Length: 293
Image (cartoon, rainbow, N blue to C red; front, side, top):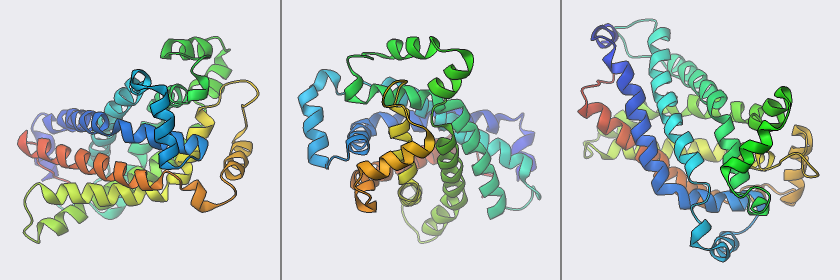
């Protein structure tokens, strides 16, 4: 029961944050090579083969360039996403003795995604500049990017620097989190009722749910990648100009806009499947019962 979960000195709450951190760290490390390939497709409208060839030309020494920001940001993302969601769900639950409703899960997911976007936008911004091979000379490392952003005035440092692309990031993260948390547990429970091995329902639920959500919001991710790879100068565009530029650079075709979609399916299956499976395994084995179910 909800009241019982809260009554045990709030221990479940802190575990929600730590379990989310560990599960996200592990899944991000495993799937980084796929993520970087997708990023190159988003920026250059490459095919998979062209993106891989570009990465090969850059060599193994640069292959893991840009790993630290997503590793740190995704770990923080898992911490905030799962922990904040559970905390908000506690506040929103209308009847502690009953399972949470779809509306409560949706609202908690939407709000936790918004918090996540506000906290992590600077990490994604730095990561996208680092991973754009066209900026290797001007910005060889994270410190050079931070130095550039910190040279701006206060307003420009936030709007043009660290929080570039905040509007589409807020929209993508809040909707994505709402969808994920709304259907993750019902899908898992439905699969578990079929007598599948205990580890499989969470893996399949996370894979299917994460993939459908990421595919639905993929155009926003393409826009964000292009906006956040821009730095003040000739290539710096407004939101409206960025939308038009992305549409033009992809030949005004939705199929080209979804270049990277095949790898996105693979990455989403692995990332969200692993994250969900690891999260639920750790939660069940650290004594944190899922009172939301």
